[in-house]
Every structure is written in C-alpha cells, then in structure tokens.
Length: 187
Length: 187
Ligand SMILES: [Cu+]
Image (cartoon, rainbow over all chains, first blue to last red; front, side):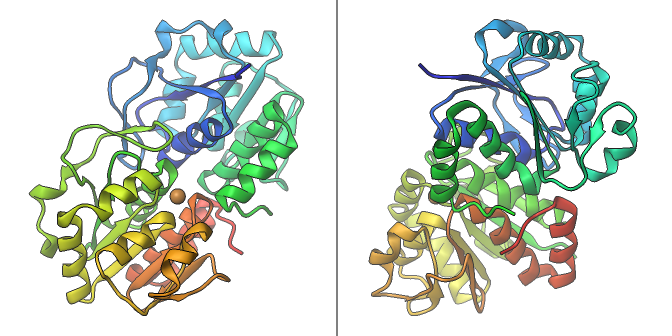
C-alpha cells in the first residue's frame, strides 16, 4: 500500500527544491512522479540543472495521487501561477483534503489559485508581503504544517520540508529514520 | 575571473548529492560543468532522478577546471572507482594542488585512485572501516577541509559541503551570504 506523490516542475523551478522531495519521498517508499507542467520534455531549472520529467501533467489524473508537491524557483512558480491545469490539480487536492506541499516562492502559487486561504503558511521571506493579507503568515518556523497543508521557506529547508511530508504520510518514525540515515540537521 | 568546477555524475550517483553542488556553485558565480563519466546521455540517479549531463568527461580537459566535485551514491561511486578516466582527472587535480571535493560514499573513490592518502577526511559513516587505515578519519565533523581536500558525509550535509567549496574558492563572505540567502542551517 504505497502512497503516491506528484511533484510539479516547470522551466525555472529551483534545482534543489525540485530534486530533494523527489529523492526523499522515494527513499520513504512513496511512488513519486515528477510531472512537467508543460509536457515531458527536458526542463531547465533555475540554476541550469536539466531534468527529464517522468510524465506530462496533462497526461495525469489527479485522483491517482495522494500528495502534490510544488517546488519553488521564481520563474517556475510564475509559470505555475499562470497554468489553469496546475489550478485544476490544486483544487482537486484541496477539495479531497489530500496533502498539498509548497516550498519557497510557490506558496504564492497557492494564492494565485485561491487554495487554502486563511491557513497558516510560510514561504521564502521576500513573499511575506504578498501572502500575509490572505494567510496566517508564520515567520518563525522553517516548515509549517497546518492540517494537510505543508509550506516551507527555501532551498536550505528543502530536506526538512520533505521530511515533514514523509511524517504526514508515513509517520514520525519513518521520518526520523530517514533524517538519521541521511544525516539531516534539524533546527 | 570566474572559477570553473567539474561535477562528476554516473548512473547511480545520489540525486541530492549531485544537484546540490551544481546549484550552489552556480549561485556563487562559478562556471559549473556536470560531466557524465560514461558520456553525455541521460543519467539515472540512485533515486531515479534523470539528469542530462552538460558534457561527457571524455571530451573535457582537466586543465580547464579549478575544482573537481565527486558526489556519492554507492552505485555511482563504484563506477567512478572502476573508471581509469576518473583516476586520470583526480591525479591531475592532486598534482596541480587544485580543489578536490568528495561526498558520502565517494571518499572511497579517492582511495581507489590513490589520492591524498594520509589526509584528514570524512565520509558516509559506513565507509569509516574502509578508509581509516589510509586516511586520518574524522567522525566528528559534518564537513572536513584539509588544505585543498574537502570531504563530507551524506545527502544531509550536501549544502554545507557545497558552501565549504564556495568558501575555499570565493571566500567566507561569499559563502556566508549564500548560506543566509538559501536559508541553510549549519551545525
Ligand atoms: Cu550517499
């Protein structure tokens, strides 16, 4: 009984923020699909890592996934804000009360698609001004978990963010074991 | 005056350990080449991230680079140990006293190619037994810098490892600025 996770990627998604949840969630035994929001062609990340998506988002059914992960990177997040397909997926996850996880710039993707307004969130610090009128903004935490919504701050928090997703789906023991095995510092 | 870094990748290199130094060193303004040790075709990492190398190692001249970075991942490290070309590159960096940086399983790649014997190193904890007869093994540090040799322990130390490479090439201010901007925890 394997949980399924969808990780979105677009041109300009942040390299570490995209690869870290894919890696950590696979280590936790989840079935992970890296989905290109504009197709399955090679995607160039914000720092020029070239990734091959596992699938095109347009070929996938949101009902097949338990978790959606939205990595940051300003240009990638801008593309995700402008994508009606990303909005459709996020609205499905919100309506089904499934796990939604957004990192860094991508808390603003949630805002653009009108997802989980009023919830407690964080983001890369520079987006606080855009978010605080619509969410309960948390400056003080590196990862914020509010029900099934998980948000976090930047590339330096990508491991802790990914472990929080593992904890939400596989439990604290699974997350603690991965943290120790991967030698992850926690604040 | 841009420093140039060569990051090696093979099938089975660890996803986070490969992408993190590429990302961080590019953020620091270095010119980074991700080089496939067996060519420039798509490489599948240990947790199935599919990366497109920038070049094939066999097409590159070691004299063109200031820094070599060897990510871990057991299967990738095993391939790098068996590669005479990787050995030729590492011997060039050692002879020219340029920066050599190895992470996780890949401290054993240095051993296999007879590089920097006797130096102070660390690695993923499980490789201590293989390394301690040949190096001054440091259990207590997440990143070990001994002259131009930088070693570190695992995916959870990849950011600190990458910042240590930045510090060695661009100075402490550059590394501290990146650490703050990327929100990286340090022990
Ligand atoms: Cu490793």
